[in-house]
Length: 512
Image (cartoon, rainbow, N blue to C red; front, side, top):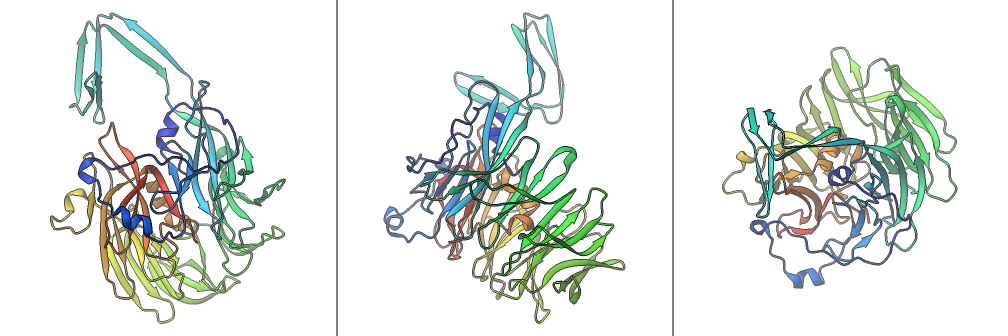
C-alpha cells in the first residue's frame, strides 16, 4: 500500500466520520526542529516573497493538507485521519498526486483494523526471566519523563516483581478497506470517491496528461495486482486493463495511451501499448524473464519508447519505435543489473542509474541521446533523482554515512542522534557537472519506500517547485522514543536557509 503514516498505522483510530473536504484554512501549528537546528527566517522576506504553486503533505496523523511554500494558507483536504472511536479501526490517507493542471489532488485512503489481543495481569509472581536479544530496547517512563536505553544481550531475572503484564497475540494491523479520492486542491468542493474495495488495495496511481483519467494499480488476493482506469467523475466505474503479478507504465505525453510492463502470474513479462479509450492491448514483445527496468518510458515527444532488451550476456538500453522495434542501442550493461531512467523535460537528455545485484543504488549518469555522449554526474550510491521542470538541474538523493560528513560542510547536517539511514541531497547541473550539496539527513520511512521504486513514482510526483528554484523534502529527527517527521522547503541553490513548514512523512509540489 502506498505509504500509510507510521504513527497512524500503529494507533487506534475511528471509522470515517465524514467524506467531505473542508475549505476553511486551519490554524497553522507551531512546528520547529529542536533548538540546535532552529533556522532563522526573515519574516519580511516571507511576507513579500512570490508564491509558486502549492505543496501537498501527508501529515503525521495520516491526513492530507495543502499549503504554500511558507507553510501558510493551509487547507485540510481530510480531517478524520488518525482518529479513533474505540472499535479498533483507524483511517490513514497517503500518496497525494497532483493533477497536471494543479487544480486537484488524488490520494488513497486505508482503513486499518487492529488484530485481537489478549492481556493477562500476573500479580506478585515469584520471578520473571527476561532473555534480551540484539535488538532489545528498554523504555522506562516515570514522572521525570521517558528514558530509553539499549541493554546488552543476556538473561535477566527479576525477583518478586509487584506485577507483570503479559500480552498474547499481536499488535499488528491490517487493511480492512481501501479507497481512492479526488479532491479540489482549494477545498471548495467535497472530495469524490472514485474507487472503493475491501479486497483490493491501491499500490500506485497517476493522472493522464489530460487529467481526465487515473491509472490505478491495486493488490488483491494471493498477491495479484490489477491495472485499472478510473475517471474522476460521479458514477464512473473502474475499468480493468490487466491482472497479473506486476505492472508498471508511463502515459504518452502527446497521445492518450500507456506504455506498460505487464508480468503475468506464470512469470512471463510483456511490453504492451494500452488504449484507454477502448481498453485494447497491443503486445509489442514478450519474454520469459522480467526486463532489466522497473518502469518503461516514452520519449518527451511521445514518438519513441525507452526499454531494455537482452543481447547475449548483456542487457541493452534501446530506443524503440511505436512497434517496439529497436532504432538505436544507447548503451549496454551487465545482464544481472537493473537500470532506472528518466528523460529530461527539456528534450533529448536521459539520466540513468545502473544498480548491481544486492545494491540499493548506483552512480548517476546523463546521456545526450542524439550524440551518445555520457557524463558521470554523481559517483555515489544514488537511490532517487528528479529532474527540475525546465531540465536545467537534477535533485539527487544518495546513500551516505553520518561519520563521513566533512567538518567544513557548507550545507546543513540534520542527521539525528540515533541510528538511522542517512541520505545526502544535492543539486547537480548536468551541463556543467557543478554540484551543490545541501543536506545530510535521515529520510522518513515513507520516502525510503518511494526511493525503492523512484523511477515509478518520479513519473507522478516531484519535490520541485514549478519554477525550478525550490525543493521540498521530508526528514526524521529525534531520539528513538521521540522522533518526528519534518517537512522542509529550501532554495535549490542553497543560498537561503531552509524553512520548516510542517510535520509530515511525504510532501510533493504541484506542477503549476
